[in-house]
Image (cartoon, rainbow, N blue to C red; front, side, top):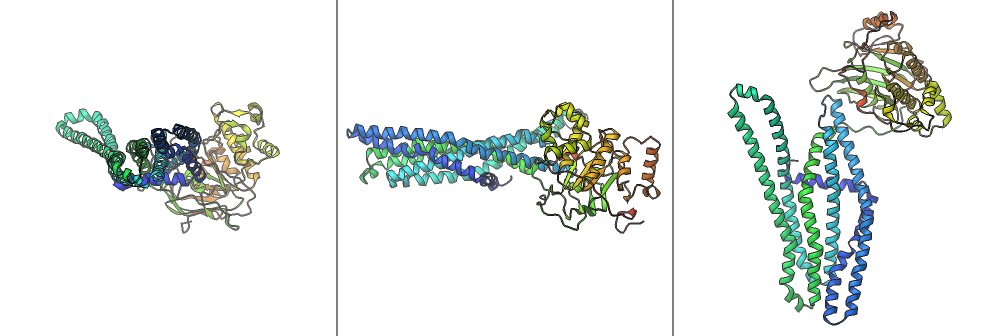
Length: 614
């Protein structure tokens, strides 16, 4: 946010989008705001009429107008009471949208090799600032519109000439404030950025002070640091000057109408105004317009500036630049389950690609195991297929459509997710309509009967922290097994299970129907698969388990060690080690899953890369 107009655009776009996205809540808030503004519309008229009635001895009429004012106050209080739930229906979803935006942007940069270390601060601090100030400003702006509108309406019904005297300075003051606001927001941003810069300089100075003194650089550092402090002081003075201009805008729009009404009182009385009319007009200005204006100017000049600056910083640092996820749609009837066409992916512009020019076809009903050393790109491949990462070049298709549609795939990452709730809710999360028989068959197929019994049945309330990692993985596997999606990707999703339990889970998924892709933790997963993809950092190999040892030295070595009972630790990926590839637990999606069925196609063993050497 570097321009004067950008601050206003940020606020206008933010408020406009948030309100437009909840039309029913906005309509309720507007309706109750009208009710809340009833006292503002009645106040000046009632006071003026009562004053004239008392002056002419009509005490009963005066009491009637004052009674009407009391009734209006009760009506306004009732409207105010109903107003805030409607406003909350706008503010709280706005906060949720902002959290999703910040999280999505941070995850996107992390997946692209640019870890976002400030995301936690934005989520825990800046988002709450935006939410609180947005809610407050929504109340303030709404209050001004309806209160000032009600007061002007009351003036117009009392005497149109008085309303004309008030409207001109009111509009002039608001225009002046609007012009000041944009420039003040730029200065406020400079103040915030300057504080960050001084904090960074201070930390760097503290760390390198000894070296600076040893090199005789004290004077240079003093001059540089002093310039930064002086610039920050100048930014503070600029913000203070704009606070003074804000007071001028308030005086023009709030006090000048009062002076004009007083000065024009003789002229108004010659045109038929009574003393009560003048008193009522002054009441509208003093108790209707001025409080609303003061609240608006102070709120927008304080909280509004903070909102514009903080929201601008969030958008600058956290707005995701990833393309939108493809909309759900029907799969192509004759398309393979998964197809990669010349896919290349690397973490960062100058980084060596983790996956380079990869072509791969997984037919419907296929069962593919992916093996290779830790860090070679197995989890990255799973993320590309799930649509959590976007290739730098090439195309990834799932059922003939761009990857990322949760209607067609499920991903189970290494770190299984279990939420607080009943066991049944956890198991049937992707298939809420599953009946007890379906859940029971899934539990039996994956060997969860003992776990269900130990936990206390399907209605038992789960506390994720009380479960072991193996128990969480079993629950997540069963959840995916019940899911309706035809493609399931298991990214070392059973590495906490023993070999027998892992074999039972993979065999159950193979019988489930659909397509199964297993990022293997043990070489036994490759033995069970119909096809095996070997990633070794030079060229990928695809073939059957029985044929691969003849052409792939790495696979031959893995098989030999496994058959000798000495499978090397971490060869297929160590979940507890440092792995430079994509961590699947970065983004757990409610639609990520996979399975297997009969494979009626035998593929020729060889290099996957089109045009590659045999």
